[in-house]
Amino acid sequence: MSPIQVTQADAIIAEHIAPRESDSVALDDAVGMVLRQQVFAERDQPPFHRVTMDGIALAFDGTRTQEEFMVQSVQHAGDPKHTLKDPQHCIEIMTGAQLPDGCDCVIPIEVYQKKEGKIRLNSDYEPRLMGNIHPKGSDRKKDEALLQPGIQINAPEMAILASAGLPQVNVSKDLSIAILSTGTELVEVDAPIENYQIRRSNDRALATSLQKAGFRRITRHHLLDDPVQLEEKISSLLDSNDFLIVSGGVSKGVKDFVPGILANLGVVKHFHRVAQRPGKPLWFGTTTNNKTVFGLPGNPVSSLVCLVRYVIPACRRSLGLGAAPETWVTLMDSVQFEPSLAWFLPVTLTGDEQGFRAKPRITNTSGDFVSLAGTHGFVELEATTNHFPAGHRARFFGW
Ligand code: AMP
Ligand code: MG
Image (tube, rainbow, N blue to C red; front, side, top):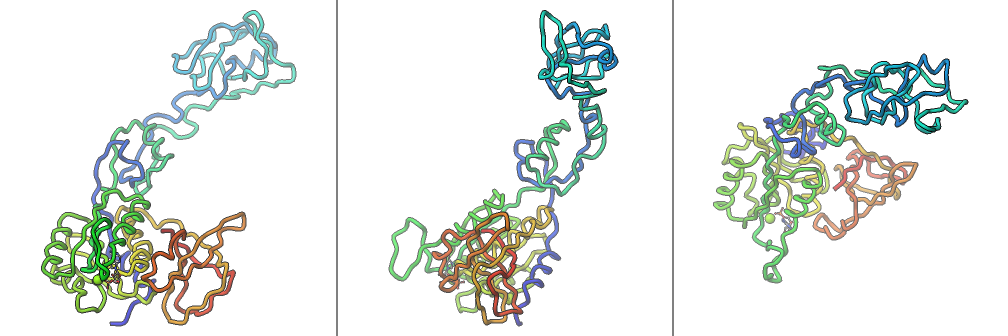
């Protein structure tokens, strides 16, 4: 089967990934999660005529005929509202207090003088009816919808949830993601090492990128290229996780057991191989009970590029989140790429008022992950063109 195009791969993934179940969590645990319920205003917003300046509250009509006001009382934020008994008087008031009864104007402290219990307005200040008052219900009315399902809970949404009096919210259940690295040649970071072995690094790179994207329930595992152990482990990881990301073992070598094992375990393959470099052997499938499996080629640049380009968007989709906003950048150097494949080219970015510019960092094969040091991500260059001049606009993906 010949490789599919990048856009086809995107479409196939989108078709096979649906939002997962939801869960009720405490507000403190909801940071960055995806809301799965509507949220309504508990009360009018603001819930009362809210004073917006420290100063005095008084009757606007009184200000037409006089410039001096006796202070009747002082009302702080959080005090029950006072009542102005005489329109010739005023009430000293603080930001956040409820407007006292009998008042329809607030005058800020900066525009008057206070002497012997009396307030004298500056002669050039013109009071306004309802000036410096945030009227009750002017933002939203009680029971109006404030938030819709599918929105990510960032700082503004967190404030709105708190304002709606919701200590618990329904969110997409955090994805449980297992990373399984394969390869008999690979050893742990702190193990003794022979000269025919290499240190395992992909699983850490993949986990780092997933963590940066906001995913928290990630476990890392490793196995030798042993089909019996692999089948057992893949089966148990599929039972206990939503996403399984296998690194290595998906190409055409005699020890590349992963596609065969996934088929044995009933994982339905939706594609294997995409017309791209790096990452051509990419494998994608799902199970009937809604588990997602990506088989990433083991070369370190390939596996990281495929994770960022396909797996993280799939994880977002699975939470019910839309695609992340696209970032487009301008190439700083011209580059040439002959094969009819999409090219994911690592770059460093600089930004100014003209936008982002991307400096290509050519790696020495897809095994050369040390050349990625300091890069911010990669640009996607289309398969249909070979020459990309300086100034070419391309879509950027961050690590
Ligand atoms: P594979 O896709 O299993 O054929 O692996 C391709 C290349 O990537 C081989 O040179 C592997 O040694 C290397 N590789 C695979 N997995 C890892 C890993 N977890 N860390 C570092 N290198 C890896
Ligand atoms: Mg391998």
